[in-house]
Each structure stands twice: as structure tokens, then as C-alpha cells.
Length: 469
Image (cartoon, rainbow, N blue to C red; front, side):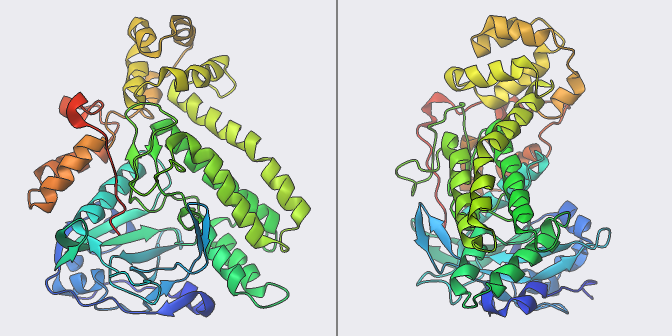
């Protein structure tokens, strides 16, 4: 069978300074574990072909399709505040870009866990089955929730046993993104650029502008920075509305498109707790739930630094000075969506005031708002601890259907994800498939599965996430 599609190698061709040609390592016994049929169809890919031996060879990077040029992408990054000037794809490959038929927009087809590259720094470059299944489930859940995100096309087991916390099954993820350009990519280009005019950085900014923010004029570096800033603000505001903790907000995990990337140590909070963090490597809570807006500002300041003097210092300072107001607007917009009112409504300010103190479970609160919209708000008042606010909100003419469309029934609860992944690694995919079905239909109004709703039971204990690298 023919694959029926070609790939482009635009980024690799345009930026030889930022890539290294590479190949995926051969896998002893690759098996397709899960394929995202709806995404494949959306991309115009033949799902029957992807399930053939040739399709599996493509998904594991063993065979290329016309136009493909596998490369490891170079980037730098501030990791937990410390600059690592040469990170790059240590266990990943960009196979190429796919042109979407309806919009002619390019999207990346990317492998994660495909083996070591020149950027591996001594690591094995491989992925474990549990973390790859986790990224598949979490990224598809985020997409279904309406959050800008990379997506997962497939998980393939490799037939290897790799060493992590013990010997675990190996796997790789096939990821789709608007691009894999990051703040760290600009940092890497700046550190690599030896021209007085910063030609490499300027070309990279124009390339990213063309691909993600075409409404900005070419060469308008201030406009480009503002577009990246506002796209990221909107995304992080959605994280905060939903109780999502990214867990590793390094500059290499802050995209220029505004998409969420890297679902290693992520989690959803069971309470609106600004101090909540779960990552095993974030020992100081740098990337705790409530720190995410401030960390985004810090990361954007690093982007501005990498753009100077293409972005004049005074202008960069002005753009960063706008950040607090822009963040406040973004968080009010998301809070207003939760409540079904306009962003300027006084109940929004009240909501944002009591939310950190009341620390409700956000998913439970959202559905309580939906339930209360047609009924007396007594139950809602008990949940939020402010009867006067609940009564005031209840006087608004809220569209119940619109409210139900933004407050999910299902989110990937930590205890459910943990249990499903443990079973899946042991070969039982029943719980994983059921949870995946629920979180990719998070606003489902049909028969509710109560066992997939609500915070973890009291005996679940402290939850810790791991990157899986």
C-alpha cells in the first residue's frame, strides 16, 4: 500500500544550524499499542495503512515517506532557573512537516523515545510505556477540553525492557504539533548566532511568525513577541481555570505557538491550591500551580532577552510591563467562562477573590454551577462558602447549555490515571481505554460514570509524578 501523503522538511532545510540529521534506532519487536484514528483522519492519513507493517515502520522512524528528513532539533533552556545552553532532542526526532489539505498549514510529525541523538548527553534516548501512554491520554484530554496543545497520534511498544525505576516496557510516542519551536529554540539560535546583525535569530523569528502568527508583519519583532506572549497567556489561563499543573515549565517547554507541550510530570489538582505541585524533580515547588503565571512571565522575559537588540531594550521592557494587565485580562476571561457571565461582571472579581481561600475541587465546582443555574443555589453556597456571592451569581441570566459546554464532567483524575497506567503496563488496557473515552468526551451529557468523577479517595495518599526520561 502507498502511504498516500508526503512530508516536507522546511525547518530542516531553512535552519541547518539548528538541526542534526539523525535516524531512529531499530526496535526489536514494535507493536502498535494505540492509534488515534480521529486525529489520523483529521490529518488525512490512511488509518488502514498506518496499521500495516509499512505504516508501523513509518511510525517508528524506520522508513521515511517522500519528503521526510528526520532531524534532531537543537534548543537551549532554562531548567528550574538555570541555563542549559545545549539541550535539544535527546530522545526525539522531527520526521517532517505534513501539509493539511484544508488550510495548507504545516504540522510537525515528531517521535518521542526513538533512541539517542547527539543531544542525548549520556541518556538512552528511549521512552517507557507508562509515560508515553500518559502523554497520549493527557494531551488528548487537554485537546478535548479546548486547551491549545500538542497531540498524540500513536503509541508503539518497542519490545525492549528499559531501566527506569526498574525494568519497564519501552515505547515511543508519535506526536503532532503546530511546531516544536520553543523559547529555548530562540535562546539556542541567539547563542549560536555569530553575525552582528543576528541574521539567524531574525530568520527564525520570521519563520515562526509565518507559521504561527501571520497577522504580524514580517520584521515586526515587537508584534511577534506580543503575539507569543498573548497566546501563552491565554493557554496558561486555561490551565488555571481547569486546575492543571504542568510541572516542568522550563523555557524549552514554552512554545512559540502557545501550545501546551511535554506531559511528563503534569497533574490536575483535587483542590484549588496555589501550593500544589507533584513533580518528583521540582523539590522546591518552583512550578507549583499558583506559580505558573509568574513563571510564564519569567520565561517570556528570557525570550525578550534572546531577541535583543532585534527587539529594542526599551520596547522589550514596555512589553513586559504590560504582562500583569494582560494576565489579569486573561484570567478574568477564563473565570467568566466558568461562570457564564461577561468578564466585567462584578461576580467575576468576587469569584477570583474567594477561590484560593475556599480551595474547592474545580471540576466539582464547575458542575455545581451547571446544576445550580436552573435551581436554588443552596448547594453551591455550601461548596463555595459564600452564600451572598452564590445568590448574586444566581441572579444572572446564565445560559445553562453554554455553561455545561465549558465545565467538564470528566478530567484525568490523578488516582484514575495512576491506576489505569499501572494496569496498562501490566497488559490490561480496560481501565485506560475507559478513562480515555471519558476524558476525550469531557462534556458528555449522557449516562454519567460516577466512579470517574470527583477527587481521589482519602486513602490515595500523596501523589508524585515522574518525567519518565
